[in-house]
Length: 86
Image 1 (cartoon, one colour):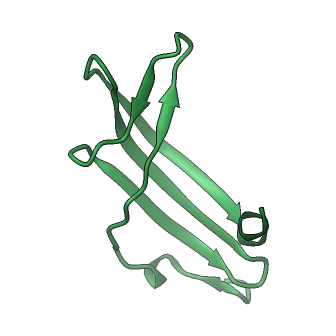
Image 2 (cartoon, one colour; image 1 turned 120 degrees about the vertical axis):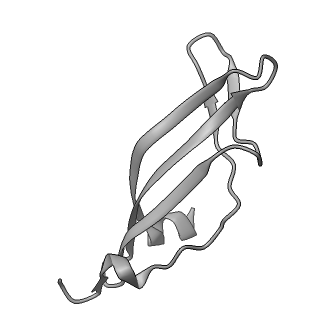
């Protein structure tokens, strides 16, 4: 482990509220709903380079037909400075 990095066990489970929206190639809109599965796992916190990394998965529901889209095995690396200054 490099200076400024923290191991996976540094993070504990914490419920969060977030909204995700997906628009398919036919302009169908799918959004997260409170009753559907959603998960975000933070896997790395680099306090020197200010980067948070993680994985996510969630289900989205079509706004009219109630059909479901499953988003799985998503990942992200967010540079915190860029996010806070925009």
